[in-house]
Length: 130
Image: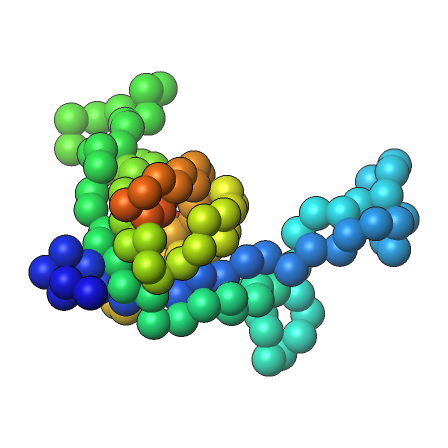
C-alpha cells in the first residue's frame, strides 16, 4: 500500500439498531432504527466493524453559512469531506450510508454517500461536532 496516497488510518463504526417489532413503545408503529445506548461500556451505541483501515481524508467544500442570521465573520457549517479507501482494504459494499468513520486524530464523520469503483471506496462525509 502506498503510504503517500493513503497516509491516514480510520475505523468503521455502524449504529446498533432495533430491528423488527421488538419495541412498540416508540411512536405509533414498530420502530426499527438506531437507538441511544444506555450501556456504560458502549455509550455511542455503535459496533466497531473494522480498524486500521488506510485512508486519504480531503476537505471537499467549505460548507455553508446560515442564511437567516449570517454575518461576515460567521463560521460555515456542514463542510463535507471525501474519504478515499483503497479497494484492497475493504470489499465492495462494506461501507453504507450513515456509517460512522473515526480517524486517527479522533474526528468523527458520518457517511452521506458511499460510492465504490475499481479504485476503491469514495465516501462523502460530514464531520460530526460535539
